[in-house]
Length: 403
Image (cartoon, rainbow, N blue to C red; front, side):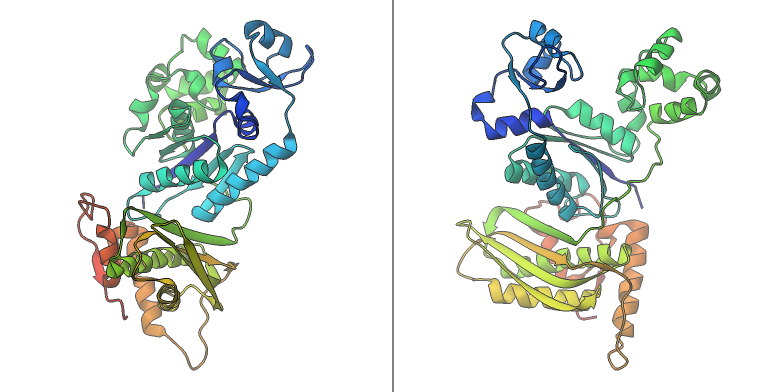
């Protein structure tokens, strides 16, 4: 299964929060930090950066470089509050989240295909963050943490960049060695002495030379210059829920496709549960109609990760909510009350056949990807809003909905 890592970074986070609270700051240079000349710039807007101002610079020097800038003291409580809003949005959407700092996130999307692919998923997640938090955010998507982070830097401000498998090395080659996250000022000066300014030069150097000059960090630097980074995305906080939703390009009345999409999303979430050795005790379904009226309903259930149970509950909730007379704009499903553990069957309710089917499908997905096998009932979902339902991939294997 190909590894997919998403890196997200809130653009000029402190400045963006201040602008969110005070619209008068939009379009003007902004410095956040100590107000006195002895203060330090904690953050600065892109308008201020264009004059040479940088974070960590003495405020006196920053004011000399950008005398028209508005200086704001800053509010750590507000920054934490807005960071938590974004964190919860991302945590609810991705399988594994690592919060690297107050404004920076890594997510492991390996094996997680939201019917359009992980790049489409990341774009939709970014749009949701901007819509719900009011803050600009950029992301990079690639096969590891280093390349994803560098891609985010190249995408800024308020944009995104995808570096697919096989393109990591040529993507990195023309960039300055400063772009590699582990290269600080001291390491950069050492590399300058060696005549190294571009990553392409590092790629051409023998790893033994970097080891002699920098020790073990030199080998790490050489690998990262080649777009190689095996560090895992580590989840610090245990997730309480997982969810997925889909906003249609055109509002729809097609109940068959709506039910098919809901089934496919529920099945995908159930796979994520089993892959993470988790169980859920609550299923919720949400529908948003063309007039933006949003309705939802949830149901408590015994702890499970069973496709059959979750599909039946989700379909029942959908039938209770759906008004066939109105076009649907969005449909979503959420599993919450998550705990660690494996499926347990009662003595008189053994579902060995369905359990074995799920295990077989999971093995195929882990080896060949999420779209490699789906239940026939969810096939209709793959054609909603897509001219090519398989996006160039071969048709998936089918599993009967009633199994």
